[in-house]
Image (cartoon, rainbow, N blue to C red):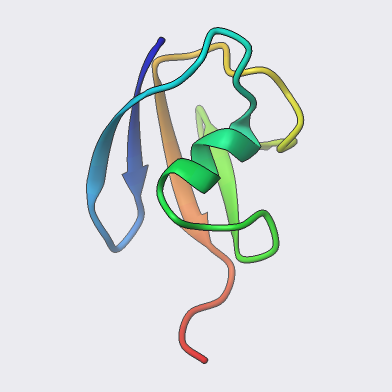
Length: 66
């Protein structure tokens, strides 16, 4: 499954994920963890263990820096 992932304030990634991928897998694919970012579908957050069911998501970082 192809997913376009727009990281707010960052880059847009074109990802190829497995058919059984979760939104947590999408975060991992762009180098982020569930503790530092959330996935939004239609501007609403989705749980990281929910199966990917759309071709376009936005990712918002909850923390930045170190």
